[in-house]
Image (cartoon, rainbow, N blue to C red; front, side, top):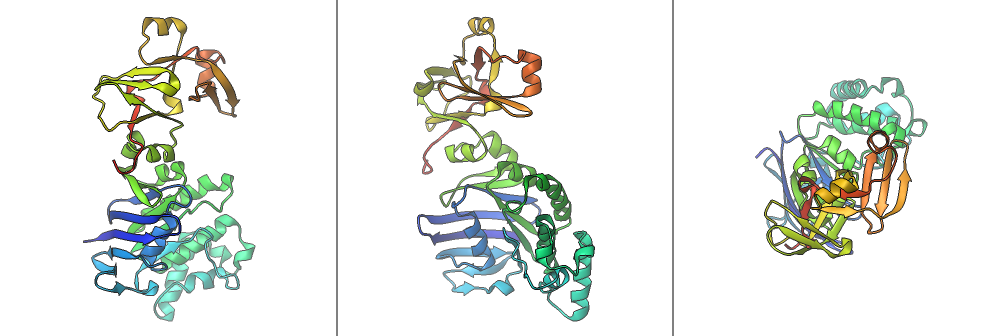
Length: 355
């Protein structure tokens, strides 16, 4: 097998981490999306050998890195795992060149060659003789990534790679990092709490909630159909509410005093629904009277204006969003009288992880 296989369990202070997934070396970038404290970084540390699972198995390109039954636990230095830490972990009293060079195995010529190669690839040649304290956050990230890549790992793991950067730096650095990662021949695993970063970077994701994977698959499919309430929240769905399934096509929503009728079959495991704030469709009073299906009258509680977007919150707690340009062009800057729940945008969800 080429790629990464992980099936581990580890007891933590307030939960038990149980994760199982497999990443092929042609799968593109795989993401782990989850809130702080859900076990994302612990998973990476177990793969790297920094932490030891209580049980399980980790394989990289068919080689066993950890196997609790066989008593195998390879040392960090023997795992060929590159780990980009959140704080970059640069050595403060070494220059940029020395920080990169220390990650390279081999003789002097090999160290010189790979150090020079990654100084050039990350465009930090002019910084080679500086110490980390004299670098910006973005420059430090490039140095840390150059050091990891120069070690020529089989798997590259990125732990919240943009969390230490100012907002205005992030987009440019994300573009640069994507270009660099296109040239990496091995497995890339990225963890983040940011749905935008995961959506932008990752072709596949696993959604982690309290130590358990609650959704997984292609990134686009998970965002379109998260199925689990926890996954829907982490992918940015604002409107999630318990429902009562009346039959195979009707749902009652007590919190919103609303009934929804769907053409598709509603599975019996559904106990919540979600709809993203941008998906709700404004309709006029006349349009609502003509077709009352899946429509709610708007009693607005709050109006929030951002530079490029408007957000309305109904008294029922339902969030609605629209670009400010569309709001002014289509609605004349007025709030809608009614909102329709389009069936294609209604997420059928389950609240319990065990289901």
